[in-house]
Image 1 (cartoon, one colour):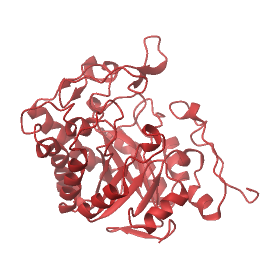
Image 2 (cartoon, rainbow, N blue to C red):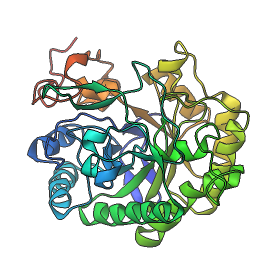
Image 3 (tube, rainbow, N blue to C red):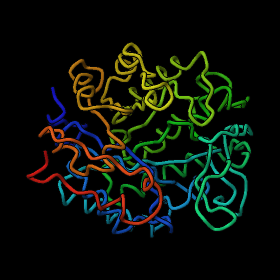
Image 4 (cartoon, one colour):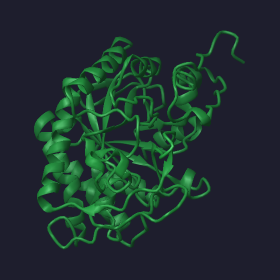
Length: 372
C-alpha cells in the first residue's frame, strides 16, 4: 500500500490516502465561510480527504475571532460555497465540529459571559495557553482565557443537541461527513481528563462517566446523519492547553476506540503532538497505535509532524490507513502532486497563519514544469 492508492472510507471513495488536516486560519471576521474560503479548499482538493478547519457549533463554542461557525443559515450558505467548489474539483470534505470549552475569552462569549467547561478549573497562565481575540486597543492578539464555569447537567444535554444540530447543518451545506473535534485540550478533553473534570454526576468520576459526553455526542450525531459519516479526532497523551497526564490515559482512549468501533464510526483520527510537545519524539507508541486500531476495528487516520517517508512506512506496517498533513498544506496546495513527483516542498510563512487576507492563504503557487 502507498499514499497514492485509492481508499474506500465506507461509502465515500477517496482518490488517495493523503488527508488535509484541519487548521484554523482565522480568515472570516463575520464567522461566515466565503468565496476566499472556497478557493482555499478547492486549491487543495486533490487530497483524498479534506477535514475543514475547526468550525464552531454555537456562539458559546467560540474561542477565537474570525473562525467560521455552522449554527446559522448564513453560515450554512457560506459553507455550501466551499463544499461545492471542492466537489467540482473531485474532492471529498468533512466538517470538523468544535467547542473550545474553557479555552475562550469573555470578549467572544455571548453577553461577555464566562466560558464553560466540565468544571470550574481555569487553565494556567502560559504563553501557549491563550485565546486569539480583539484586545482593548482594537488589534487582534493573544489573551489569557477567562476562568470558566462548570456546565450544569441540563446544559451538557443542550451542548449534545448543539453538536447534533451542527452536524445536520453540515450535511445540508454539502459536507460528505463530519469530524468531532475531541482532541488538543478543548471541551471533550476537559471532560476526559480527571484533573480538569471534577464532577460527581453522570458526566464525571469514573472513566466511563468522563467519556460519556463524547459518546453521547457521537450517538446524537449518528442518529441524525448516520454513524458511517461521523469521524472523531483524539490526541492521547497530549498535555497541550494545560491537560495534565494521568495514569488512565491509555486505558481511556482504548475504551473510547472500542466504543466508537461498536457504533460503526467512520474513522478514528489520532493527532500525535510529539512534534510540538516532546522534541519531535512521538507520544503515541507503536503498541498504543496498534491497540487503538485493533480496538476500533475501522479506518484510522494519523496526523502530527508526518513526512512522506514516515507516513508511507506506517501505512505499510498497518498502523494507520490514512496520513494527515497540516502545515505542509498551507504552502503546498498541490501537496499530493509534489509528493508523487518528488518535488521539494515550499515553506509556509508563519506570520500569515492567522488572520489577514489572501497573502499566505490562497497565493501560494502550484509546482510548475521547471520546479527542481
